Length: 576
Image 1 (spheres, rainbow, N blue to C red):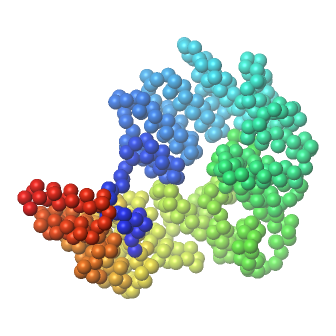
Image 2: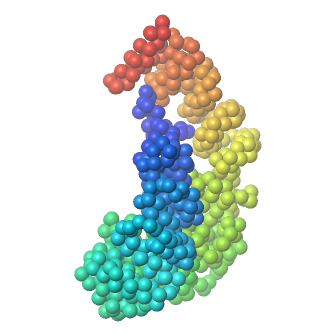
Image 3: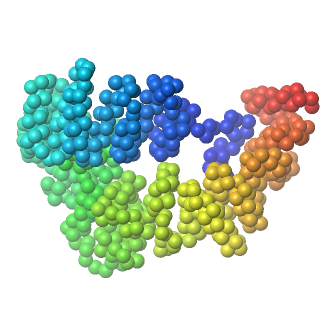
C-alpha cells in the first residue's frame, strides 16, 4: 500500500521538487488553518513567527493570525493568556486591537464583569485621543456585556446613553438596539427599528421579530429560512446558526417536532455558535430533548428495544432524521447495556463531525470523557487524528484496552498504536505493532496496508530504526508482488534518512526491478531516480550516472529531461 500523498501523484513525483514540510510563509500557515489543521498551524507559528526585535510589523501580521486561529478554535483562555503576555511597548494600534479581542474572548466565556473592567480601562485610562470608531465599538461591547448577564434594563440604559452620543443612523447601532429590544420582549419596536435595513443580520432579526409579534405564521417563517438557506453561499454563512435557530423557534411554536429536530441539528452543525446571546443559542442538550419529545409524540417509545433498533435500521437511508431520533432515544433508554452501545454506534455513524462534537462533547450528559460510550470515543478518536489533535486523541484513548462491541480488533489495536506513536509514547506503540505481527501468521493485503500506514507514522517522527525492524518482520508475510515492491521502497526511505546511502540505493533499485529488471513504469522510474541520488551520496558515481542516463532515454517530458541532463553534467564535473 502506497503512502497516500505518493499514491495520488507517483507519475508526477519523479524529478519533482519536494513539498516543504514546514511553513515557509504566513500564507502557508493561513492555508493550513483554513484547511482545518489549526493545531498544526499554531505549531508552525510558534516555530517560524519572526521575532518582534527583527521586525515588529511582520511579528504583528503573524500574531494577528495566531489570535484569529485561537478564536476559530474557541480557545478563549489561550487567547487571553497570549494577549496578557504582550509587552506594553508594542505599537498602540495593535495593542488596542488585541485588548479588544481579549474583551470579546471574555464575553464568549461569559465573564461579562471582567470584560467591562477591561473596557473601562481602555476607555478611561488613556492619555491620548481615542479613535471615534474604536470608542463606539467599545461602548457597544459594554451593552453586549449586560446582555450576556441578562441585565436587560442596564443594557437598555447603556444603549440609550450610546444613542445620545452617537445616534442610531448606522446599521451597527440599529442592530444592537434591535437585539436589546428583542431581549426585552419589545418585538414590534425591534421590527420598526430595522425597517429599511437589508443586511443579513437585519433580515434575520426582522424575521424573529415578525414571528414573535405574530404577523407571520410559523410555517411562513420556516419557509423563508429554507428559502434563504437554499442559496449556496448562505449554507456556510457566519449567521447560519441564527437562521436555523429562528426556524427551530417557529417549529416549536407550531409543535412541528420533526421540523424542530431538523432545525436543531442544523444549528448544532454550523461552525459559529452564539453562546452569549439567548435569542439564538441552542445548547446541545436541547437536541437530545427534541429527539425524545418527537419520539413521544410519534409513540416510538412503545415496543421492545430490539424491534425499535431494527425499525431505525430500516429507515436509515430513506429517512436519516427519523433514524437518528430512534437511535438517540434507544441509546438513552438502554444506556449502559449492549443495545445502548449499539444504538450509540449507529447514531454516530449518521452524524457529521460538528454535530458529533456538540451532542457528545458539549452536552451535559457526558461531562467526563470516561462517561462517553465506547463507540462514540472510537469515532471521536478518528476525528481527532484527522485534525491532527494528538492530545485529544490520546486523552480519548486513555483507559481503553478493548475494542468496541462488534468492531475489528486489529483495527482497534492499530488505532491505539497510531495514537501512542503520534502522542509521543512511541515504544508502547511499537510494542503493539510488533505483537500484532507476531500473533498473525497470515495477513491479507488490506491488513498489511493498514499496518504500513502506522509504520509510516514512525518514519514521520524519525524513528527509522524501529520502522526498519517492523518492515523486516512484516516482509515474509507480504505475498502481493506490488506490495513487496512498495515495502522495499519504504525501507529504502528509512535507510536514506539514516544516511546509509549504499543500503538505500540498493533497496530503491530492488524496488524498481522487483517485478521486471527492465521496468520503466512510473513507480520504477521514481525508484531508479532515488536510487541514483542515494548512490551519488554513497560514492557510486558511475552507477548513478548510468541510472540517470537510462531515465533520460525514456523520459519525454522536456522539463524532466533538462533536470536529468543537469544531474549528469554535475557528475561530469566530478571527473566521471
